[in-house]
Amino acid sequence: MKKKVLVGVMSASLLLNVGIGAFAATNLQEIKAYLNPDLKIKYDGVPVQLKDGNGSVVAPITYNNTTYLPLRSISELVGIGVKFDNTTKTVLLGQSGEGVSIAAEEHDSSHLTRDSAQTTYKGTTYNEAYYNENGGTIILYPETKYTLLKLRFAAIGEGEREIIIKDLDRNTTLKTETVGIEDGMMTIEANISNVDTISVSVSGGGYLIPVSTSTYH
Image (cartoon, rainbow, N blue to C red; front, side, top):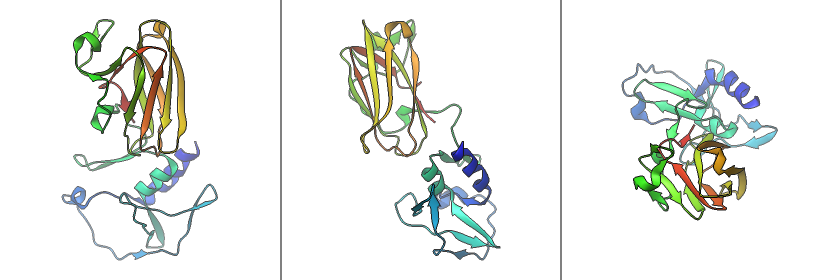
C-alpha cells in the first residue's frame, strides 16, 4: 500500500525518462526550468541517488516552484512498473492487466520445445513451452522492467514438484511452491520488482511451462 500511495501522490509531478523519439509527434512547449542537484532524496529514511536507464545520475528539476522527479527512477526505487505506449502516447503505471509474455524478453532456450507431443496438456496444445521430464532450471531476464511474474506451470508424471524462484543477482528466494499432479495447470506468482535475472528451479520430476501464457506485469 505504501508504494501505491507514494506513486499516486507524486505521479502528477514526475517526469518519465523515455527517448526523444517518443515525443516527436506531441505538442511540446518550451519552458524555462532549473536543475536542482542540491535536493536530497530519501526512501524509507535511506538516502538514494536517482539514475536514468543508463545508470547516470539525474537531478530533480524545479519549475514554477514545483519540483519534478524522473518517473522511471522513482518507479524502480519503489517497485512500481512503468512503461510508455508510443502508439497512444500513454504512460502506464503499475501492472498491465494482460501482461507481457516471458518470450518477449531474453530467456533461456534450454528445455524449450515446440514439439506438440510435449507442449500438449489435457487437450490444449501450446505453441512453445519449457518441458523437461526430470526437472531442472531455466533462466529468465525481466531486466527490472516488471513487478510481477505469473508463471503457468503443470507437473508431468508422478509425485510433487518443488519450485524455487530466485533473484540470481541478489541470491534471494522470491517464491517457493509445491505442486502436485492433481493441481493441473496452475499459476505461480512472484514479486519481481527491481529483479534483473530470475532462475526457476524444479525438483521432484517433470514439468511443463507454457511460454505464451506465462507473463510479466
